[in-house]
Length: 100
Image 1 (cartoon, rainbow, N blue to C red):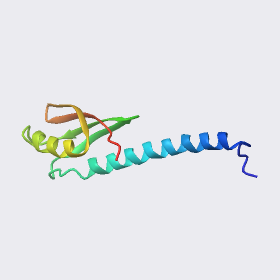
Image 2 (cartoon, rainbow, N blue to C red; image 1 turned 180 degrees about the horizontal axis):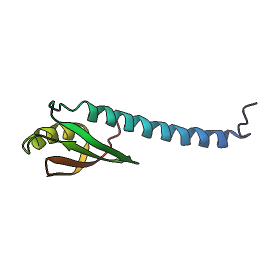
Image 3 (cartoon, rainbow, N blue to C red; image 1 turned 90 degrees about the vertical axis):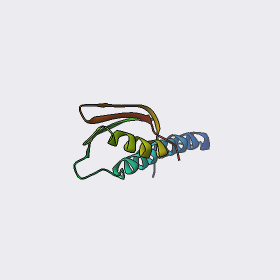
């Protein structure tokens, strides 16, 4: 009826596979939530978000360079930040998705 494998070993492997995928997706969703909760000013916005496996990249349009330090402090609270740089008032952030 459900076309499941005969042995419990095979079923357990399928369960492990999908449990791992589920945890990865939950971590990505949690990370997106934290990025969207950043305290941006009215003239600031997230320009791009990109996720690859356990890493992410985000571009944030900021009004002034000193805002990068404020946002950096917020990001460090949740993420394992690997790189932050600012060019032409765009803050480029690359980091590792944390497993909570």
